[in-house]
Amino acid sequence: MFKSLEFYISYRFITHRILRTFFIVLAISIGVAVQIFVAVIIDSTQANLLKRTLGYSPHILIEPYENEKVDIKIKNPEIILNQIKDNYPLENFKKIIYTVEGVVLAYNFINKDDLNVKLIGFKDVFGKDIYGIEENLLKGKSNLLKNGEAIIGYNIYEKLNLEINNLISVKNNLGNYKSFKIVGIFKSGNQNLDNTIFIKIEEAQDFLGFRRNEYSSILFQVNNVFESDKIKKIISNNFNFPYELTEWKESNKQLLNGLSAQSQSSFFIQFFILISIAVSILSILNMKVVEKYKEIGILKALGMNNDKIAKIFIFMSLLIGFLGVFLGTLFAFLLLNIFINITKSPEGIPLFNLVIKTNFLIATILFNLLAVIFAGYISSRKAIKYEPAKIIVGV
Image 1 (cartoon, helix red, strand yellow):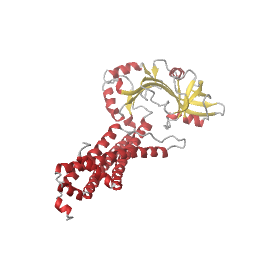
Image 2 (cartoon, helix red, strand yellow):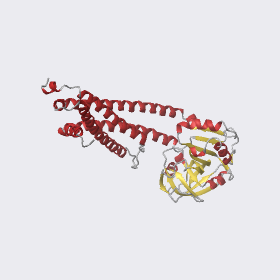
Image 3 (cartoon, rainbow, N blue to C red):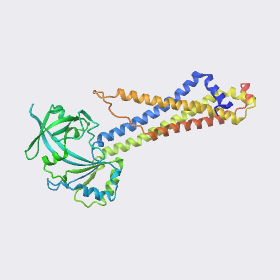
């Protein structure tokens, strides 16, 4: 193909007026860059919104009913998981943990400050911890806690003026005190989570009055947060244990409506951008045909048939299109990199992470290439309709 006469002529057509070709390629690449940039920003915004609101909280929760006795606990949660497993494989969940938690009063006896906080001990059953302590750690360590060690949220660190290796004391509802050495400080951006102290689960059980087989709740995260209601229904249909089962949509209806509206608007925005780029490519390549109409007449006069002339413009559109799509993709990633670097917090941390869907990126590139091929075909149909005699005499 690359040694054929038609390919060589198409290459000469492109390089004859290189500056004009440059602006054509630039126009296509800008369109592709804008399309990818807008789509990635919209998808990233939604993904980061979901992560901030649901990334560090359960999507499905099993806990004792609030109207029962205050000291009711979930006993032997393995029995519950076995019942769930009979109807829904646990491997389909993203994360599962058992928690022991309670509200305590935290003290810094050095400056005599105190603060109501949540004390949590948790056990990973499947996947890493739901709370994202490791990825949100500001100082210290987040690996396996030892007895007498604690990781505190940023709100506690800030309000009680505590640092790594300081001691924090807590008092439970029975008036008992216990001190922990601070080995880590994390900041999730979630106000409730940043007001939490994490300790070893056995210590939480002992301090809050739980036995080793007793827990406060079972927390689940699912792979697709929008399917949590379906999964809850599967579980509840075979629910024969005396605890409450809830999922995130029930208490976040406004968030759900906002996400649905954002998804719909994102689809329409990306659809119309795709259509506008396809039309632009078609218009640009049609202009290229008009520019070369005299050369077409000469080629026809020299005996070149319509099929070969059509191939010239298809090759030309492919060369321009491939170059435009390639440069457009590079421009898009350059713009995204600039955007991330200029939208940072005062601490220099990006406000959100980019989420690039590989399937979308491939589909976008293929769509634009198909648009270019289609535009090349339309242009070639137009080119072969010219009559050489009229073109040469300029009629």
